[in-house]
Amino acid sequence: LASLPPSPMRRTAASIAVLSVGIWLTFSASADSEVRRFEALLELDQSRADYGHEILALYYRNTGRPLGEIAHYQKALAISENLRYRTNIANIYLTLEREDDAMTWYNSILERDSTYDVALEGMAVALQRSGRYEEALPYAQRALAYKPHDPERQFTVGYLAMMTGDFE
Image (cartoon, rainbow, N blue to C red; front, side, top):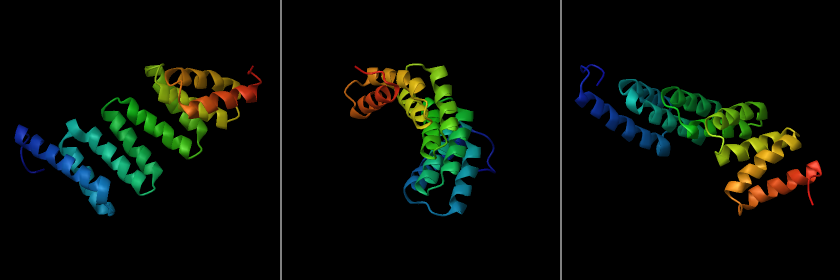
């Protein structure tokens, strides 16, 4: 495909290749050489490259390499602004117990959409883990307002209220 001149046919072929290889990578890839080939395919069709980087991020998740996962979500984000990519990066940092990095990413989400409940919940958890209970409580309360029957969010609000002495 790389030797073909730019054309709609080349873009279509590259899109099909990206989607096909992406699906295969997600479920069965184990060789890094296949990942390098897939990355080369992404260069052929930039219109689908964000999705391809998301597929590679999932591959890195499945192989237990969170820093590779973050790198590919960042590449996808550089191509296409998407709150899902930002949320995934923040959640990975939270899993890695890098709360300050997680909070940076949750803040970047909330700057774009202050009502995004997943980011509100994540920010509350990151602040809670950092021992910043008073700061965490408003985030947890706002997240709970979007899903008032969610037992995890109820627990988080109750726990934070107890830790801050703000309960009745």
